[in-house]
Length: 395
Image (tube, rainbow, N blue to C red; front, side, top):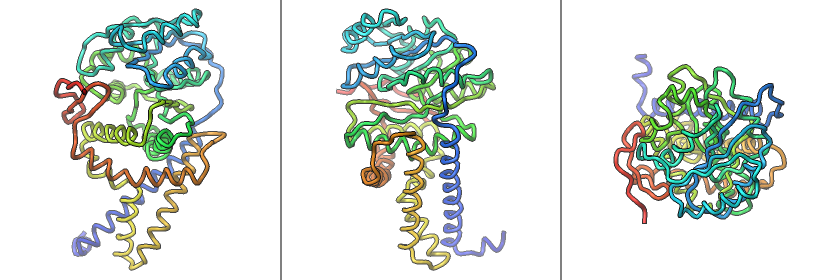
């Protein structure tokens, strides 16, 4: 210990950062391993097809909404109901939902209008009537941007074993050719996938609600959905409360396919910033660590640390670091995507550079502008993730 204390502070910082980067490299390796082990497994026939109530909260209409909703009427599962949720009967999604319900009369579907105010989170308020009237023991909360594979419900139910109360699909994206959606897909297939996969492997709570299945009985043990009405990231806190009561969380083999028709580079950056602000509010201790795990920041500090300790050329170290990181991300993206990847290597490289280059700017934006703009409101969160002021309406 005394020999360590006698070292120059810059040497100590260099050693500390090399240890941090070693841990980060281990995350890359674990994510590769778990993606190959877990994702895109063959779907097996279930011994029992437990009923599922699918909650679809809707706000407005975007270009791909009809195609996304239509996939839920073609799910290959014998026992499920579709419960559509909207805040008011003037929402433009109402005629679309009614049209689909008439087109598929053999699918058990209902439309709930009006919501129920149980807190400050509009999504929870929107889903409450459907939640209270759901008739099956399993609840699937599925965002409007999700495109559902026919076999995905069977896959999720298959991972809902006796000790499991929450099964999520890892967020990913449906293949689209435009710049914005491809940028979004790369983020969810690399940086986000790495943390999500390793978190699930190590049994950390990292649930996201865009496609999550919950055992209704277990959620009622936690006070029901209404208890989470004052949390903006209600999906994460579902997992926290369930694990406190001894339940486990699982990960489905098929990733969730987001298929928004209105993604641009700017809207993706705003979404990434919003998620960063949520993480800061829920887990304040990661504020210092967050930028250090981004590629270019880590690459710069790693090369300077190696140069400080060994005298090696920092530009050569930086080049090796970047090539290794990119290769790891490209491999992970392939594993998350599965077969028949449409994006070629050159396009992936350009978009990957853009995503990594803008990551520090998104971090700074989240630090300087803590208010969260989401849907029709602007929210401010207290430490711990609770909404602390009533949402202000966006113009």
